[in-house]
Image (cartoon, rainbow, N blue to C red; front, side, top):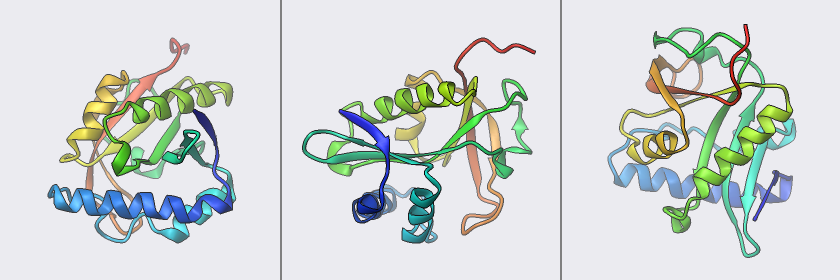
Length: 175
């Protein structure tokens, strides 16, 4: 199992992962990623910026996660409360290959990205998901993420859409 930065050669596979997830969510009646986000251009920009990470087995690329180090504009306002206001990393565009769901890969993605976040100096992580995305909510709960409230996305194709917001404290908060 290898967790690494995505490279340009991964773009085709990442796009296929997203396309498969979009189709699965649509089939499950989940209105997440149904408005053209994320798309190939966004994934290419994530790779160019060095913020997209992938999880691969010896046979295939099984998951992806974008690690954002800048404050997330959508997280400025929350109906609820964050665990704290300290600097945080945020995870976006988390996706596991449809054929590999239920094998614990989301948890591995989270653990690897959390360790990377700590090494980058962040003591906590924030993430959000669609209110109907029960599989992601379960993965977040299993991973120790605390529900903090509801945010509304700012900008992009899903502007204004509500999302459930979560945070995980990676080390005890100081300050």
